[in-house]
Image 1 (spheres, rainbow, N blue to C red):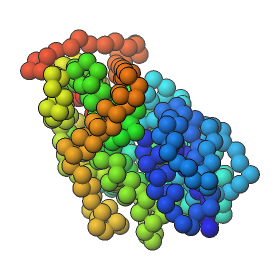
Image 2 (image 1 turned 90 degrees about the vertical axis):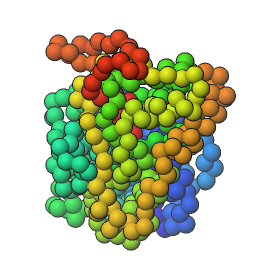
Image 3 (image 1 turned 120 degrees about the vertical axis):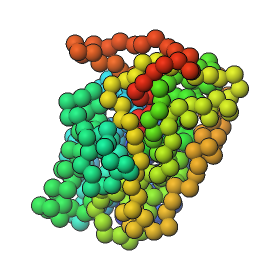
Image 4 (image 1 turned 180 degrees about the vertical axis):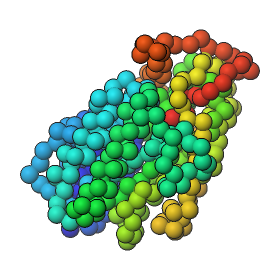
Length: 355
């Protein structure tokens, strides 16, 4: 029987992974660690399993006399408006969290880490294979997230080389679905929330760059298989995502067809938002044979919209998503003016960032 620590277990993706963890028969103890920065207790309120223990604490400060057979590190914000406003917390959550949590791992235990497709930066290669080293600006406005993920990957691989650490590292592409924060700030949640609130979907730039939209149920199935279910011996990194590439503007337009009266407005682009994102799944198909991200963005968005509508019925209102961070030469912030759809614009939509 095994014990598992899930850091970030109250978050959007972490809470869905917890649903899979409680299905395991070989686990006697599950500790959910979360500081509720971007996660919420509501995401796991349905869990009634006595094996699950919730600890509200930072990953980098967690202490326990217990040593865990498996640690899954997902404790990080993933939305640009959140991590760009708090770079110190973002870097500390990823790198400091990993360093600290390694001390809670039992001898011979497994450490799994949720990295990101953002390690590829603004790629010149499409689709992006795991071997691609990327085009990342290590001092740019997104670097606190991109580089802390890259650094944590480096740490874990060096621990594997020098100490034989058993690791599993996945690189997630855009993930969306129910339990996303309504004020999350990423594309699908932003657009749905705006459509339901005031009918104005904000696209920063022209929205022409592409993303690969993975519905949460599909993605979590891959995580469960790779982290514990399948008997594979591959440390990673492993791309996990949907390789159907769709532009941000197409996502926005589709949502306007689902919410009558909604429309698109354009604002100036956000600096360094990547132009494209698509996983090369060649390795994934070999490591996880038979797995596919089979939910179309159309079906996934419909299911996510239904969930958002239920939340509106419960809460009576929707919080506004955070504004993107525009950094000028003096490191200040400014916000652009809107344009109706059909107006001229270029660059990226901040809402297209990884989910």
